[in-house]
Length: 269
Image (cartoon, rainbow, N blue to C red):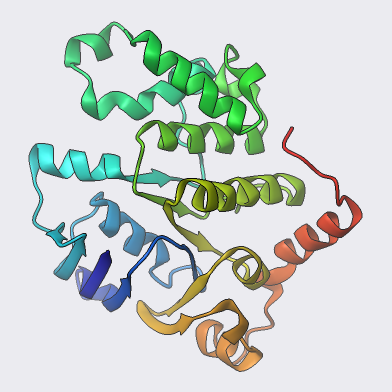
């Protein structure tokens, strides 16, 4: 389904991603973990073709992705949607219009300039927002929403593209524990209910263990672990984060789990 072969990205004499190789043969939720600077974000940007690789190959369902250009590249970026840590919304634009921006790659320049959307797309955007528990926020400006709500708007925008893969680059890094849980629960449900592949860069070990079917660990640009969450032992974690690591980065997800235990009936709101 998705295959990376020796995917590499160099910036001058620095190698940000070094011969990353793995295969995903069915939709699953994958967490990529590692220290800041390990190459996680660069890997996702190459997958989405926001950044070109220096060498190596990406293929999806037998199609070579690294060589795509122009319209073919834009079409791939629609199939491989990206969610960012800082949301990347238009702050002064209403929520539903931000969600509808997920259709830009298939709309004409004229329609984009005059903000013209088919009723079918508008209804779909509202349905997605409702699914994520924030339909009532549709007429509000994006800047009026909380960080957790804005990230759900970003997820809704990605779903408007009807992607096969959702890439999430540190989706909960700037969120408090309650909103982090809501966002991760939403991504997990999207994977399970829609059968979409979700690949998320995560700072925290416990979050990866809790939500992911498979975990890939990166260190200094190289993949040093690829396995099930239950294989993430302390020894493996030290291989990923370094021998001197105290794993303080797991604190956020520990807080999420504590919150979950004390709020068993928590629902999207």
